[in-house]
Amino acid sequence: MRISIDRDVCIGAGQCALTAPGMFTQDDDGFSELLPGHEEGAAAPMAKEAARVCPVQAITVA
Image (cartoon, rainbow, N blue to C red; front, top):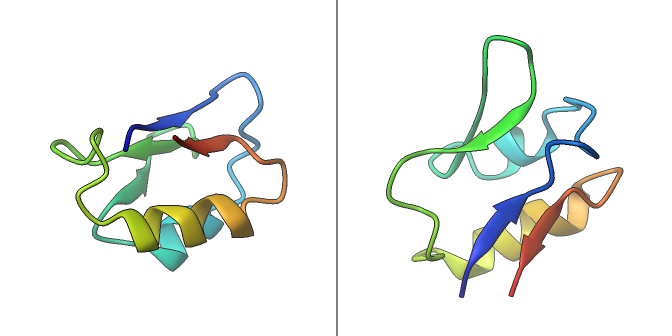
C-alpha cells in the first residue's frame, strides 16, 4: 500500500497526527507529512483510519 498526502488539499487539522502519531506529523507550517519510512504503508490499518478521519480527505491509501 502506498500512502500520500495532497498538500494542496491539507488544511492542517492534525487529525492524522492525533490518530497515528507514529506515522504522521505536522511540519513547521502545520501541514501533515509522513514520518520517514511510512510511505509504503507498513501500518496500513492506522493509515486507513487517519485517511478516514481527515476532514478534507487529503490522505490517500492505495
